[in-house]
Image 1: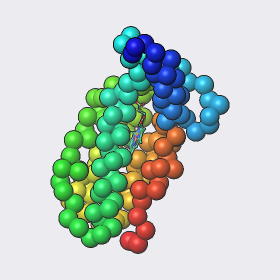
Image 2: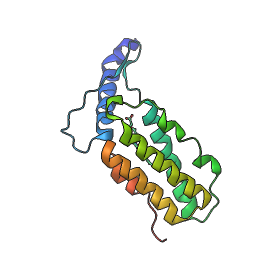
Image 3: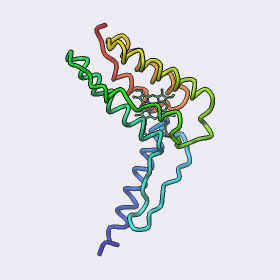
Length: 154
Ligand code: HEC
C-alpha cells in the first residue's frame, strides 16, 4: 500500500523544510517560520519561491561561467541572460524585501552587463562580490558557497 510510505514522506518533507530554513540563515538555532505546502497525496512538499528558483539557476549557471572562464573557453550568452526576473520574482519572505533589495538587484544587473561586454576574471569577480553584498543584507546562508565561485588570477 502506498500509505505505508506516508510516515517516510513526512520525514523527508520535514527534513527538506528544515534544510530550506537554513538556506538563508547562518546559525542553526535561528528560528524562521516555515509554511510547507501540504500535498495530501505526497505528504509535505517544500516549494521554493520564485526568487529562490531564480537564485538556484544563477548559482548553477555562474558555476558554469566560472569553469568556462577558468579554462579560457567562450562563455555561451545563454548563461548570462534571464536574471531580470529577480526584480519581479516572489520571494519566500516578501516583507523582508524592500527598496534596498531592489538597489542591490539593479546594481547586480549592471555588473552583469559590464561582465557581458567584457568577460574578464576581474569583472566576473566583481559580479560575485555583488552577489555577496546583497546576501549580507538579505540571505547570509549561501555566502560561503558564493565566495567559492570567485576565481583567482586576474
Ligand atoms: C539583490 C539581492 C541578491 C543578489 C544580487 C543575489 N541574491 Fe541570492 N538570494 C537573495 C535572496 C533574498 C534570497 C532568498 C530567496 C527566497 O528564499 O525567496 C537568495 C537566495 C539564494 C540562494 C538559496 C536559494 C535556495 O535554494 O533557497 C542561493 C544559492 C543564492 N541566492 C545564490 C546567489 C548567487 C550565486 C548570486 C550571484 C550570482 C546571488 N545569489 C545574487 C538575494 C540576492
